[in-house]
Image (cartoon, rainbow, N blue to C red; front, side, top):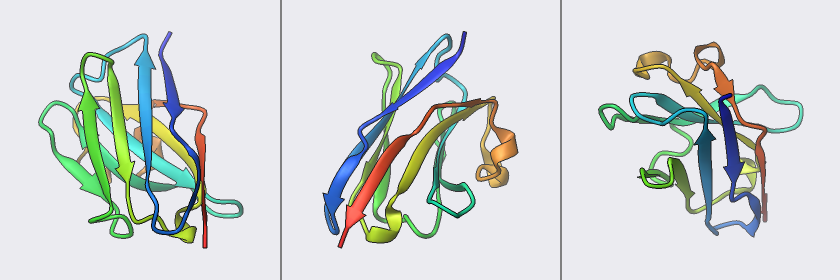
Length: 126
């Protein structure tokens, strides 16, 4: 059974940093498109960033470029998202999602992803 588990959320002040991690059981991250989405209350779930583990291509939404960075720990079967210079508008529930090979231009479309985690809350105070 495939399961994705997010960790690392919490509360920080504006300008601070958090590191979110996505761990998988039941499958490996090899040759997968792994993405982070977020959803704030009353808003649509939106794509934050994605990485294609087969080729290393990374994709970032404009609103996080230069602030968020992917990393991968193969031994732990874990992919992390380092979030720096956090802003109050980054506050949301963050979800890890997985799809088959390739991310491409449609990386931010929710329908692309077969598996989702339960989410981890990020709160940024001003």
